[in-house]
Length: 385
Image (tube, rainbow, N blue to C red; front, side):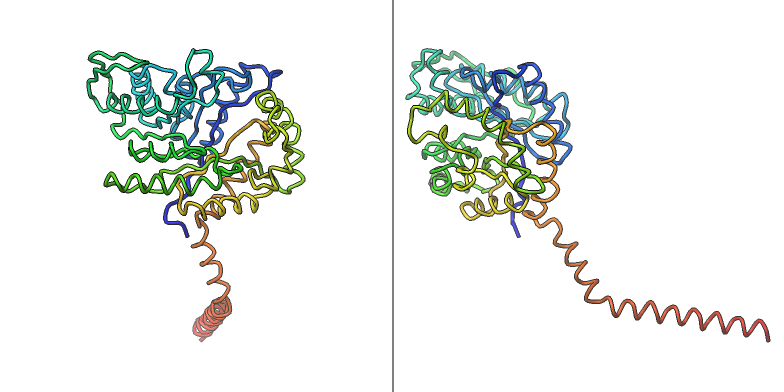
């Protein structure tokens, strides 16, 4: 049984095909947060992208501000803010305000920025993004802690910079994106942050998962700290139904539409995922399209890499119709999480115990009935006398 109960969340880039109404697409993304909160999910993450057409959320902060008004319990994460694209003071101020608007439910996720096309539009050198992420985290974390910062680099100039409004939650959680390189693990250790492992089951990403976790642990130890696996989030794609055939039917058309975006980005590369079918991805164990048992098996694979990792984030890529998606998420909450967390172990033990003792219990009931009849007969006889 797990030492740390597995949490569940949704990570939404999001992905919306070019023929979809963008207003309704964004509305769907907000409604989904309400739906999964009602299913008991713990976290919901919104991304930041500025080009490419499909990933149409330019501001996770705006999405979270809207979602916070519709939800009450679920935690909301920026997945992620691309720090090199923003002035650190402006980022810190938005984060602090957003934490108040969500009554302390915010998780601050940060990364270097994924799309080179985004950096290109801003006139930035994407090869500098990881260095700038470190610089940005250094400043933003100090500002959120109440420090005044005077500092000048090649991309910002701060003079007596400070947050006039500090976060609602003084223990505001920070998470750093981690994919293939060791950079995410090192930064997570440096800033005592959680890890967003966004390539957990991808080709090469699965192997890198345990390596990056080890790097994070070793780096934390050098700083005199211990990193808990509960702060590690593993992301993967899952869609489940009553049968594998039904699950495949529900996502095949949506996957083909999503694949157009991947082809647009990298079809010219021979090893691009643009050339992979659903069957290919399933065979490589990168995704789950199947039954609750298949989802459980995938989580067990991840647990072998990082025992007791804290949260499974389902990468929602808009492959299925909304009603099929809701049913898949309901089945995940109803059947997968309880099995992983052992929620029904006490019930099963009680069930088995009752079966083992059923002969004794039935004998007790029969004896009690006989005593009742005998007592009634005696009382009747006494009244007659």
